[in-house]
Length: 324
Ligand code: HEM
Ligand SMILES: *[C@@H]1O[C@H](CO)[C@@H](O)[C@H](O)[C@H]1NC(C)=O
Ligand SMILES: *[C@@H]1O[C@H](CO)[C@@H](O)[C@H](O)[C@H]1NC(C)=O
Ligand SMILES: *[C@@H]1O[C@H](CO)[C@@H](O)[C@H](O)[C@H]1NC(C)=O
Ligand SMILES: *[C@@H]1O[C@H](CO)[C@@H](O)[C@H](O)[C@H]1NC(C)=O
Ligand SMILES: *[C@@H]1O[C@H](CO)[C@@H](O)[C@H](O)[C@H]1NC(C)=O
Image 1 (cartoon, protein in one colour):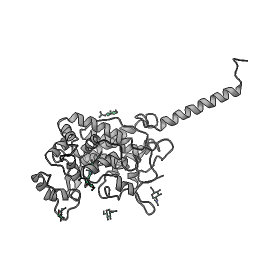
Image 2 (cartoon, protein in one colour):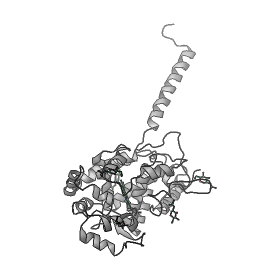
Image 3 (spheres, helix red, strand yellow):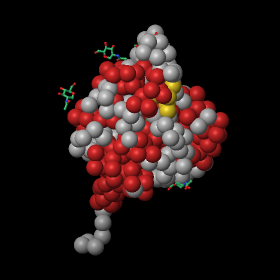
Image 4 (cartoon, helix red, strand yellow):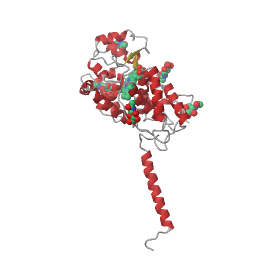
């Protein structure tokens, strides 16, 4: 009898293996993976890339706007597409938060991508993953670096206006404020500098740089003067200026060179090179574009890992603007 097994012993062993297997599966599904859609939606990534390339070729700035959406999503309770939820009579999302109101753009591009994905693989690809992939494809489309996007994020059923107002750094912050806003999300000073290099593309409104060009002294005077014509001391709040005056549609390291010339557009930009602890890193990235691009890519992957919803939490929204 020593080598025979009762059917109940086999059953018990089978159940133990099943439990162990599902436990392992549960652990695995809590992690993001680059191949998450390989069988469930093999054309997901190429669909997003084509749509981003088409949007960026119509309007280069859209690449910047899509990159910023992922940042404003991830810094507010994680990368869960909370930033995409519309307000309605019974729900207040994040779109009217100070850093977002009249500022975020690209929602229509995300809607187009989502409807294409719902056509080919209904209910499979999350809005949070669309933002992560669109951010990468945008940087690549503007000549920047490539990285492997981790996938498998799910979408929130909630949003937080107060977290959006408190967690997204303001352009009025000084260096210590910037360092703590990023440290609160687990980022080092070096990563703050690398991620700020995003301001090598895109535009900002007069209202966010007016005080800098009229009242600050750590600014190149001809740079300040040239900006005043389109940003009067009163009025013209929504008039735009490029964050990187030299190459606003190229994802390069010119942003850091500008800072060294006191040509940062935002108060917060120039704080990274103003006699403080991050000056040396700005110098390093200004003279070594490859190290900037590598550190930027790694920091973007890290940002994309901020508190994702996985497994059975959250949902896959059918429409990125509202919960199912
Ligand atoms: C370091 C702290 C940061 C501050 C204080 C900040 C602030 C701002 C402000 C005020 C604007 C202009 C908004 C407007 O005029 O409506 C802007 C634009 C932009 N930000 Fe940041 N930002 C920061 C970091 C980042 C990061 C980490 C990213 C991406 C990873 C990013 C990506 C962008 C992009 C691409 C734009 C241009 C968007 C467009 O043209 O539509 N920013 N940022
Ligand atoms: C958002 O901007 C609109 C103008 O487009 C303004 O009427 C509204 O008061 C702003 N909301 C908040 C919360 O600041
Ligand atoms: C970027 O990297 C991804 C994944 O590593 C790869 O599939 C894609 O082909 C690369 N894109 C470009 C333009 O190099
Ligand atoms: C930075 O800003 C904070 C808050 O406004 C302020 O308390 C602090 O003194 C400032 N730090 C420096 C070095 O200016
Ligand atoms: C510049 O500073 C002065 C004095 O503090 C203030 O009255 C004025 O409103 C500021 N101007 C801008 C554009 O911030
Ligand atoms: C309002 O938005 C919330 C969040 O997307 C959604 O759950 C709810 O169904 C919406 N209500 C209406 C009336 O559309």
